[in-house]
Amino acid sequence: MRIDVVTIFPSYLAPLREALLGRAIDRGLIEVAVHDLRDWTHDVHQAVDDSPYGGGPGMVMKPQVWGEALDSVIGPVIDSPARLVVPTPAGRPFTQQLAHEWTSAERLVFACGRYEGIDQRVVDHYAQRMPVDEVSIGDYVLVGGEVAVLVMVEAVVRLLPGVLGNPRSAAEDSFSDGLLEGPAYTRPEVWRDLPVPPVLRSGDHAAVDRWRRDRALERTARLRPDLLAALPPDALDEADRAV
Ligand SMILES: COC(=O)c1ccnc(N)c1
Image (tube, rainbow, N blue to C red):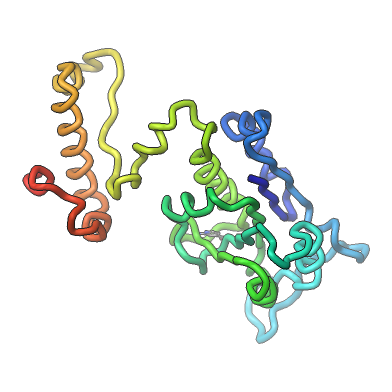
């Protein structure tokens, strides 16, 4: 998978080259290129924004600059294998399911908006030619889309084959079965008078699996009842319903 990010703050994306993601790049599992939007300006001030039509606070990012940058980064959009992703609080929710969907994309191109966002015609123009997703990582507003790109890239790349040491990790994620993950424990057996639940040391794998499922169901019911409500009818068996 190739990932391109267009931003006015390239250094914000430095963490993409650290740790797990950095190793995925070194191993050739992904390619990452970060582009400075100002490289496509032609004025001495390298202006990337202007006042909003209709008035109102803040500034809007100029369509011309974005058009030149995205044309250059995406290349010929006819049958482009790329998806254009625009992080915005006004977008569809970014979810584990969307992360999984994006793992099949050959290319992800992220357009990082700042200020009051990017002139809508940029999305409208490219949406006529390729898949464009306006995506939110949660119901809150950031200063720019760069942090959201870090979140989304990590969520997607960790799902790619070979990236995680143990593929079971991604398969057993929170949300992988529609539930939140239950609690996890490691040594010591007792810490500050708090013991590890005995079933986890029993060696009875069936009992451990049941215990973990019960804790996941309890946690989901307590913290995210909406996830329980969204489960397909056959997702819970009789034992689940007894929790
Ligand atoms: C400027 O971008 C944002 O404020 C943003 C992007 C993605 N998700 C959000 N919740 C906010």
